[in-house]
Length: 355
Image 1 (cartoon, helix red, strand yellow):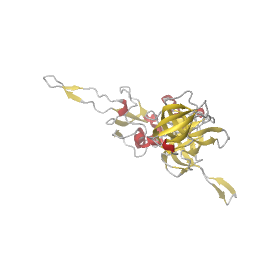
Image 2 (cartoon, rainbow, N blue to C red):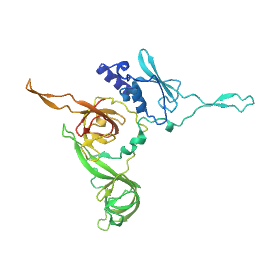
Image 3 (spheres, one colour):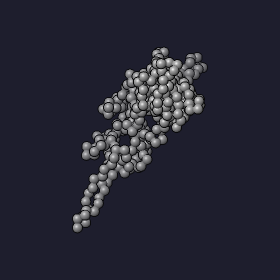
Image 4 (spheres, one colour):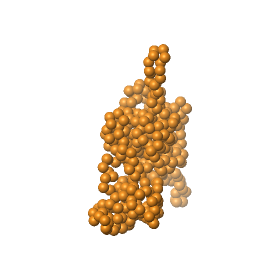
């Protein structure tokens, strides 16, 4: 994967006539930086690079450093030049020393060991983890014939975490837990009209407590469920789907896509049309177009069409870069992305392209 990222970055740089020394480094970059607790790879990259996701372009793998891609507080990054090109070298924090129990009280070295989970994350997970939702893109028949909520405790119509709910449907192969979803919009490609998928809006998680025979339909059962988590009020007719593992994020390594991408924002998770920082958006490109979790895309506002009064012609102004998003879920025909930067107000139908 790393080789693909590096090859893609090099190809993009060559395509646009860019040189790492002239373009990637910020004018006010430091020569050294000591990693602090609370730093992220995204933050540190932004200190050195104008395009933080091109971190692999200048990263120098130190053969003497174990796990060189894991960076810990106290480590120092040094900017050096190799064959005229900038490179960042990792210098581990100084090894701790202790007094030997021997009678001469000599100083003896001790190995510094750091668990992987103390390494700095790639992106600010503590700030954005709540925004990396369990919302999914499903096929057109995903909600057909699945169990659905018929009542809350004491016949309530709005339910939440800590409560008991009832669902009805086909439970012939019951699962211990379910995700509760609300059918959302069906997305179609704005250019081709192809149906890409339907939004399954995350509502809650439930555990199965018991099943009872449905007297009205022998093929159905009535399930009693405990709500273990809710992201919004559960409503009657919300649907139950198998739980899907949520593969978030310490694994994310922001990187440019390995292939050219030219798409649009189709929607926002809550169904609004305006987009802001940390909003989850759906885009019309997915696995079949080569998009993978961690891929970074630039967001562009469409250039307006104006009238050239002298030539008496309509002229389209250039598209204007306005933000950055990172893909965190990829489906066959679509992806979900998290807006990491928003320099201008964003909206549905804004463009997404290689950064």
